[in-house]
Each structure stands twice: as structure tokens, then as C-alpha cells.
Amino acid sequence: MTPLTDTQNTTAETTPQSAVASCSDDELVGRLRDLEQTMRATMMEQLLVIAEAEHRGLHVANGARSLPAWLRGLLNIDHHDAKTRVRVARNVESRKTPSGATVPAELPETAVALSEGAIGVEHARVIADSIHALPEHARCDQVAVESTLSGYARQMPPRELAKLAERIRYSLDQDGAHRDEQAQYEARELYFWTARDGMTVVKARLDRESGAKFAALLEPLAAPCPEADGTKDPRSAGQRNADAFAAILDLAIDADTTPRAGGWRPRLNITIDFEDLKRGLDSIGGGRMPGTLHHTERAITAESVRRIACDCEVLPMVLDGEGLPLDVGRSKRTAPAHIRAALLQRDGVCSFPGCDRPPGTPDAHHIVSWIDGGRTDLSNMTMLCPHHHRTVHNQRWDITMRDGRPVFIPPATLDTNRTPRPGGRALPIEHRAIIERHFRPSRGHANTPAV
Image (tube, rainbow, N blue to C red; front, side, top):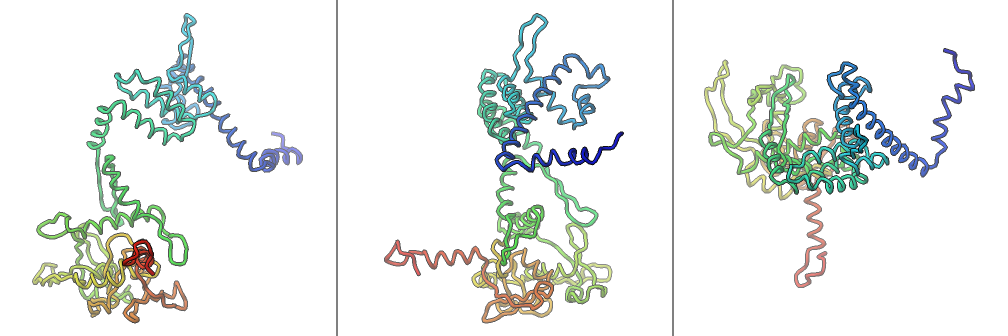
């Protein structure tokens, strides 16, 4: 191969890029649209070639078991993509019979839109699938359905077009729609298992109704939470979804209507040696034994148990050397109902500075852990949402009480000066208080905001 000269090399490298770079913004937008329209029109031409290749049996002549299999190898595309092109090609081609008569395309308006480059192959697939899904008694509506869908395809992306197509089919075939929903309900499934690293893996397929309930519960709790200084929520979408799911579990466990097993509400059972539980973070590496999560028989660190134990029922139990119980005490809740009520009145659902969307049910956090002798009273407790409860324990924030209110002191890794930050009620509660204070009608003046 003869190498390019300097002039040739410069031209080959810069001409296409310089032509694009010299475009104005409006020209770039127009060029994008023109290119998409051209690619779509070219794809229509390929679809007609595919249809003709099928009539000639080229895939058989080339030893392929099917036309999609032949296209997959010939064009280096996925099998699903190949099947889509073959399916659409069969519906948008018009051809002549041996006698010379013209057989129109099964989806003529879709074929026109494809030829004009107004829609793509995925639009056409949605239309074809929708037409073929119509029952016999609705075949008389095929022309109207195709005309409607091909018209809206010019302004809707394929996913939205599929929703419209489904609504049309449901309206024309209510019995079939009911069968679809029943089939989805029968196909529902949910599996969970513990992976080798101890994490729980959940895999589920939910019917539409259950899926909608799940989304309705999850989405508000999974919304990003801006921090107090305005920085973005550092959690990924997957992490926010996981936190929201954990919050749903907290709400379910805390609900009075949750089914009981053996007279007990659902609970997280953990066993740990009390001496290991008493040791602080400074003892890491000093032989402290982890606890055991009974539902999975997996280990859990003593520090995580300390966080969970801030607000839980504790059942003291004396075990022998083989781990068998010798004596069982009476369980007690570390934050009785009247203490929790007072904490909620004082702190709201979370007193961490800047907390604006605390998911799940709040935890009553002991400033000095009851494990270390801290008292279970208002002067030694504050309410924290699950996210900030974990933050306080994991990042080792200090909390003190000043004038009856919690003050949070960040770790040196976050603030070298460890500047105290006054705690407050979670912002949704504070916002409600502001509205009530400034906009609640005063007595005798219903339309006058209270000051």
C-alpha cells in the first residue's frame, strides 16, 4: 500500500472534521435530522432487499437454517435485530405476482413513513406486532389501527408508541387483555439467595399491579437527597434504590398489621457475645468476634450490631460453652413508647444537620450507647433516619447536647477543625412548621396569614 503524502494525509484527516466544525448550531441540528432521515430511508431500501432475498431463497442457497440466521452472519448483527428486520420487511414490501398483478404491502402507511425516513425500523416493528396481535373479530379495524399508529410514530419514540398500541389493543380486545394480565400474574416470581460474600441477591418478575405498587413505594424514597452544603447525592441510582428498598422493609417491620410468627412481630435476630458488643472501634484487630445474623447464618461486625442495637428489643441470654441457652431474661425495648414520642416531638424524624428526606422509620440513637452504660432518656438520645444513623456510626460523628438540643461534631476526615453543627428537625417537618407559623389563618381573620 502506498503511504499518503503529507498533503493527502492532512486532507484525509481534517476535511470531514473541519466540515462539521464549520457548521453553525442550526446547521448541526439540521444535519443531524437529515442524516437520520437518510439512514432510515436507506434502511427501507435494505428491507426491500431482504424481502426479495427471502423470495429467492438466498439463505437456503447459502446453507443457513433461516433468513434471520443468514442475515446475522452476513451483516454481523444480533439475532433479535435480524428477526426484527425480516419481520418488518415482510410487512412493508409490495410485490408483483407472476401474472403481473401488484400485491400491496400489508402495512402500506407504515411503508410510506419508512420510505420517507419519518420513522425507524423499531417503530415499524411495534406497529407490525400490534397488528398481528389483534384477534380475528378486530381484524376489521386493522386499517384504522395501522393508520393511527403510523401517524403517531412520526412524533413518538418506539417505547411510547408501544404503550399507545397496547392501549388500543386493550380497548379492542378486552378478553385478550384480561388473558394477558392473568398470564403475567401466573408468571410472577421472586427469588432471593445469599451470595458467597454474604450479600442478599433478589430477582423478581412482578405482575403489573404489584409492579406499580412497588414503583409507587420505591420512587419517592429513592429520590436524590441534596446535602446541606448543596452538593449532589453521592449515591448511585442503584444505591438509592437499595436504600429505598431497605426503608420499605423498615416500614413493613414497624407496622402493627405485619403478620406475626409464633406471636412475635418480624424481627432481625442477631446473636453476639456481650463483651464483644461492649468493645468500641478501637478494639478492631484485637480479637473481637462478630455476631451472627440468624436468617442467613452470616457474620455481622460488632460495630454494625452496636448501630442496630441503638433502638431494638434486647433479649439477654446466658449460653454454655456449646452455645446452648442456660438462662433467658426478659426482653426490653431500649426506647420505650413515651421516650420515642418525646424524641419525635423534639427532633422530628431526624435531627442530623440538613436532613431533608429521611426514608423509612427513624431510629432512637443513644449518644452514649446503652451498651456502654448510657441512659435511655431524652438527654442521651436523638432521632436519626436510617441513612444518617449509619453515617454517624460509620464516620464516627460525635454528638453532644446543648440547651436540650443535639449538636453534631464531624470527624476530622470531613472537617479538620471539627466545627460543631447544630442539629435540627428534618426539613419536611421544619417546612410544615414554617407554613403553619406564617400561613395558618388566625382566629377571626380567616384570610390573613398568621405571623
